[in-house]
Image (cartoon, rainbow, N blue to C red):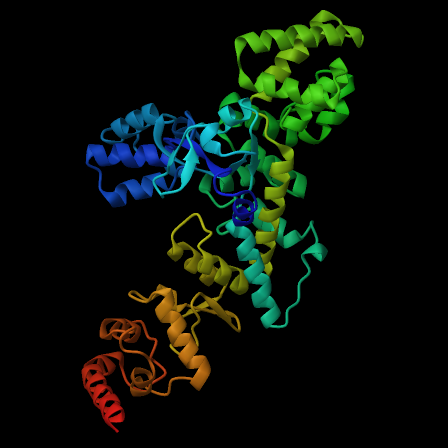
Length: 494
């Protein structure tokens, strides 16, 4: 889609928007730890316990709420200094990069309108961030790709190959096994839900429907955690606290979220119900309140009180509701966005629970996961899915499914690139399986597949179908290569 837009309007009139990357919890811990002399292994272990957010307060909230971090002696040196300096670095600018989804389209060369520069990757990007672009009145659109869509698609393709047809439109949205897995927090490999913090929240939330998943994705952010919104929501959901509504008019609006203003759409609905604002005015109100500018906040307060009085509310009621909305509007999340993500989360969990081999093979191939590959291989074994070694006659480039097992792909073999793998697969498809080590060395191009690569293939078991131990194959490889070279030379001479 992005390529199409560049071709349609021209590279002079289209460009990516820059973003100033700030220190997230993980990057702050890693950079500070390196400066303090921590080992890579120590930092990697600690950083992976952190959520991937780039706003202040995440480290503090994580130390209070995440079980793994609570076990660390973070009040003692050297961890005390690590977390203290890391918290100071959180949210501060780190480097310039390309925005994940935002691009600008103009009706003239962008060099006439905004300053441009090269990103570290060599792409031309704006020097203004997205808010500055919007203030200038330029057209900014967001095109965001998600690798999870590819994983879902690949899973369905794998299922089709095994004649297990699935129509996503017919998947039940109340599947008991899927929600049991979510309630237990066993979400490794599930889109957006696999971090330890999110797994902990799901255990507390105990989701039983898609609406609960939508709420979980909206609640698992620093703002709701620090403001007490998450705690309030959980207590009201489970009946530990009384559900209260600020006004009878907005009871229906806040019914699904137990009286908590959780979504941006709810903010707009509340001000429409209380102050009679139309949808356009309600959206402007939401944006203004979210900006947290004292001047704009006061302007909106005066407007809200005036409009509310016209709708029959007294000043005390209107003030109370305005303060409540102002508090939660800043932390409110876009429900449409959360719903889209929650649906993908549900689909990935459903596929993992019902078709673990097919789903995990796709996930391992495309590297969508939050953790290292070893974790997902262990997860496959937990589902009683066998992991098979690479095989020169059975492996594809990525991970593939064989019955109820997963075959490791050739891309995982050290020294093998995609071009070399394509050459091997093309040779195999054209003339059939390789019959022996000699047959393999004869048929492949020695300029592409070196002796070192063949040794690596032998070591990881890709030639185990031959009735010789790997040590024997390694010993005879030089003799085989010498013989093959001699045979090819004789063929050329003849």
